[in-house]
Image 1 (spheres, rainbow, N blue to C red):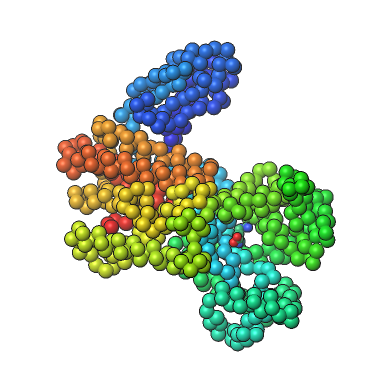
Image 2 (image 1 turned 135 degrees about the vertical axis):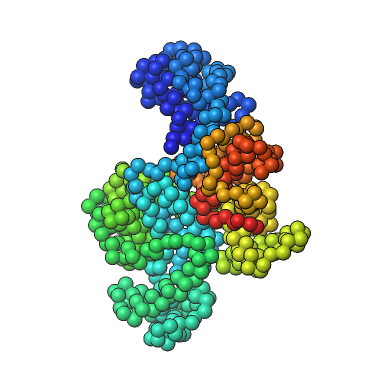
Amino acid sequence: MKSLLEIFKGKVQSALAAGFGAELADTDPLVTAITNPKFGDYQSNVALSLPKKLKKAPRVIAETIVDNLDVGDICDDVTIAGPGFINFTLKPSYLSSLLKEIEQDSRLGIEKVQSASKVVVDFSSPNIAKEMHVGHLRSTIIGDSIARILEFRGYDVLRLNHVGDWGTQFGMLIAYLREAYPEALTTADALDIGDLVSLYKKAKIRFDQDPEFKETARNEVVNLQAGAEDSRHAWQLLCDQSRREFQVIYDLLDIKLTERGESFYNPFLPEIITILEAQELLEEDAGAKCVFLEGFTNKDGDPLPLIVQKSDGGFNYATTDLAALNYRIKEDKANRIIYVTDAGQANHFAGVFQVAKRAKIVPETVDVVHVPFGLVLGEDGKRLKTRSGETVKLRELLDEAVLEATRELKDRLEQDNREESSEFINQVGQVIGISAVKYADLSQNRTTDYKFSYKKMLALKGNTAPYLLYAYVRTQGISRKGNIDFNNLDTASIVLEAAEELVLVKHLLKLSDVIQEVERDLLPNRLCQYLFELSQKFNQFFENCPVLQADEPQKTSRLILAHTTAKTLKLGLHLLGIEVLERM
Ligand code: ARG
């Protein structure tokens, strides 16, 4: 079904064509939702953009548009304000009919895209044998939400985990493993090396101190690259160990991903050099093969190179990304490729995208986007660290959130004199804790840094997961208390009169525009803001409009409002990777 925004756009375009000729039908009608309800619900500013073209005053243009508008069925009022803004106020009876439509639609009026084009979302992507840090947590949460929204819209989404599983550090690790844990290389499952990260640190110390070890490590890389069986096996063990650790986090967060790490593209790296050579883009700089970037200069004003092959023949992170782009376009047939990483990699992606476009690896029809995000800060405003100054382990961070959420829940239950089973307490604490972490991240404009605070994210008031989850719980409370089957409401006569009812229904009808906005700008915080406002509007309705105590047809109308709010919250939160609770 069309959204109100689309409906008004169409109405204004038809009026333009009727008033000024068919060639104006393509004009952007400049329709927006009005934020201050005093002036109406939707507005068109198009009259202000046409005086030059039509050689008429904007107010005169606005009058002609209004004279040609066919909105009698949907609007109570159309006014011209100021220099020529056209303001529309919706008819309650029209709102009732739209509410009826979305209440009965499992997709809540959100259409699927016409052609299911392919989208790759490259997210999470931690590095083997290294700690998965809060930056990867942000990528995981934001990437998953973007993927969910695109999937819901009907795109064919490929969720790719571009793990860092290749490179010289593996030579060092394997050499160390041979020395310190030789049995690990021969016996299956004998590998209980504990914390890979500390193993990595020890290997690094050996590497830096012992030239002989350094040489052995170098040889290991060569062996690994050449596919020597025992080297591959050792490498596989290291990857498996990390993978198990990552999986714990993915399970906690309910994340589905296809792993296709850097090693996957290793066989395709030489081809990239061939392509760049054929396109005459490749140059030599101090023995390294590189492409000089347009518009990127160092402080002396010289163009910066994107190095694709080092003087020792080794390839780079950028080369792998070029090969990945080539593969995703040629083999996966991607139409849009989205990379969710910290803002620190913005230059890397700008360089890679530019070279890939110049080399025609990325045709004009394919959209490649970097979706950057800011840092996670501690309460002190500096990069999030443990008290002793180390990187925070994600596992511990999530466990702590669940612990805090459970503690708060127990306090609340005690205050309210509620008895609940330990099963209930554990489950609710788990959901609230994880949801709070996800929502705290998603509700910020991703491009800014944000402060990580358990207290803030777990608050029952404010723009938090618990506040939204609680609004949903309230809707379910109505159906429980009144013993009402929400799925069986008689939508024959909906009446909307109270101000709170009208405000709520108008907001409910905006979901599809918000989803399309997120799809375009890849900013999930817009959906969070929408759901937060929905919860506020629902709470105002709930506090001012009796539902179960009301007489018919008001009672059923209000139940329908509550049900549609519940469905909207549930779907919206699901698209953020958050599942609702029936009680909390
Ligand atoms: N492994 C990288 C990191 O931890 C992120 C990879 C992002 N994806 C990509 N195609 N480069 O920073």
